[in-house]
Image (cartoon, rainbow, N blue to C red; front, side, top):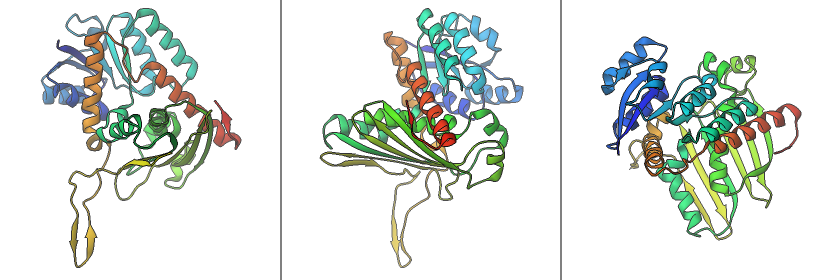
Length: 329
């Protein structure tokens, strides 16, 4: 079975997904839609797909599924439109910045029986997936503590921050999902601290650029998350899981994994510069999993409900910072 895709949004993440789709032998990128004509033309030229409007993609009989890479405030409306149109839907996180709106959207997905997958790509990273497998195989015993470090090489532009919903809903939300993935339980309490240490303009927009979060589950498991909008040494992505019998960790990845030793000491190449190259395999595996869910008629994961829970945790972190206390989820 070849799944025929329409891509909504030809920006940075749209380009990443276009590459994942066109690299998969079981997928075909049929069309792209974007409000910016040149962006659509560039992606069309790069991947040999047509340029269509969203309305045309919605009505198209030669498109089975859509990938939504448009601004966050359009996600829920588009999910509902394409669910009613009978298309399978892959949507970048978050579904919306408002929990109630997400719940309304998921009600439409359930009502129509649509396939919906939310883009938490890190579950599909080979290194992080290997950590989860080590846990499942019992190699470290019962999970007790998880540590997640996620730091961007630099802050996004002010225009992006003003629409993103803030660092917890835009950046930490990936780590909330990864925490659930590794803990094997849902957190019941969130304690967060946040500062503006990188760029004062971020603070003027009402957001933060440096945050720490502690999650705890009903059984007492804990997860510590460290986020920063600045890592001068590259895209910092590490996890560690401590268990009753040992520990498993996934270190930072580099485009070239070598180490040089000479009179100046030991040196290693720089880290990946950002998510586009660090998570190339994860994005490919993610699209493959979506295609498999469509072909088999099974529920896609991460699901809309996973997206809802991650957003609820993000909201709790925002409240924790503002109120200076632990928030029960």
